[in-house]
Image (cartoon, rainbow, N blue to C red; front, side, top):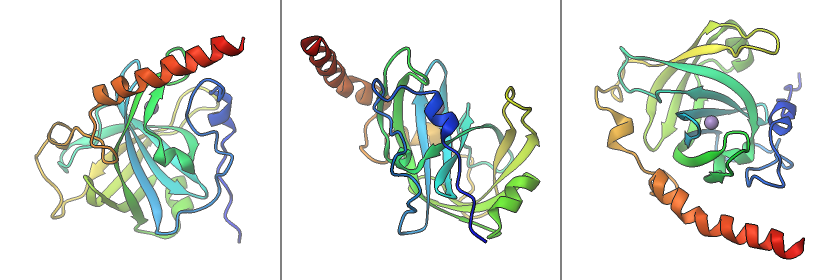
Length: 211
Ligand code: MN
């Protein structure tokens, strides 16, 4: 049976790709060569949060985690499921313009691959318990996402908890504080924001020159 592809309509409807440099997902549907992508983006929008994304069915399943992941199996972190994102989003680091959806700075905090414990991921998602292994630079070992509340049509988002399983990668260390830099560029959020100031000014000058 062919896998059903994810749906990017919601993702696209929220964004103006003439203004934001985020990918539109035009080339999505192509899977990565070396396993399923995993990424966490640290996102300083109106509130700081961590966007947790897992490649599945040609898109990135996405959860917003206000407090970020914890390596401590005793700590459960709230993860609100949000709209699927295009696969190319796994490479995005930069600044979303103010006033746009999710306006603020995005850092590629961690990246790598993930392996579902049960190959029937669609069934696990329906049942609300997804067990998996992460092979990132910062997050490794066994984890679980457990759904605690279904989404209601249109309004509320499905809520899950992200929990570390007990294994050799479990720890009491605060990984967010210990490793604050980008896994891609080694920059801090403030450095990413500062580096993009020149680009934004240049884009603004280009716009006014054309008008
Ligand atoms: Mn976000």
